[in-house]
Amino acid sequence: MPLRVVTCDTEIAGEGRDLLSRQIGRWHGWRALAAVALLLASTAQADARQDYLVRLLRNSDAFRVRAQAALSLGQLESTRKSVAALERAARDRHPAVRVSAISSLRRLGAKASLPVVEKATRDKNKAVRRAAIDAAAALSAIGERERGPGKPQYLVAVGMPGAKAERVSRQMLFDARIYLSEQLLGLEGVELAPDDLTPADAKREIARRKLHGYYIESSVVTLEPKGAGVRAVVSIIVLSYPGRDMRGMLRGAATASGRYSTETAEQAVQGAFVGALRRLPTVLVAAKGKGSL
Image (cartoon, rainbow, N blue to C red; front, side, top):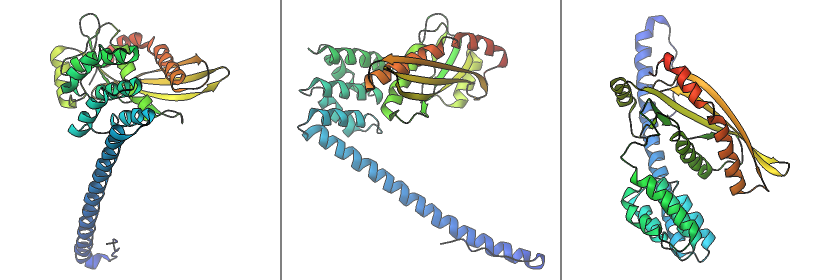
């Protein structure tokens, strides 16, 4: 129901307010019903998409279709059905599908699938073994804090990277976050904050353990063919944690040799992040005096 505007002068202001309040109340009621309907529709849409991808993964004769379906399942919310489908796909007859399924189990944080992933570390295909070893290490660490060398000084939360560049896919952003986290673990004194740590719990932990909290935001600014290679430019914003006040900004660029492809794009983005992170230890030390919260 559309909101009807009620006008009134000061002499009937009380009556006008009551009428307007009733209209607003009705409008909010309709809006709430519409929101519920949209939520149910989006949930049904997500369920339908998952069912479609599971069918593709199970029934398609084209290995590329199965591999893409496995990757796409890793970008949806984890469910028992999707995890079971990915576990089956980890034993697919084609290695590309096995790699995709194992990578998605890692992205979904499916720790219960660790036995399936560990079995794949003995796969006859080298790419599958490599993906399984990385996934097994990541899944084993779930529930445990990931720390860099030395005594923990910094509790660092890593946000999902954004993208201004048109060529950046959602999968590339997932992979970039994993890569960024891995690079941070190479820095002295860094401990990664778990994704489920609430701001209130982070604040208490930082105070109790006398740590310095930082939040890492990042973005792929540019990703494009450049001459005989692919050039990427990334930015990293260092914020306080959990307060999110600005502490510093870093920028990195790199060019990967070769024609534009998923592989060269990934190499360029990773190289740009490495370049941006070179000055991060200096920023972390300099920001200590500004406080974390």
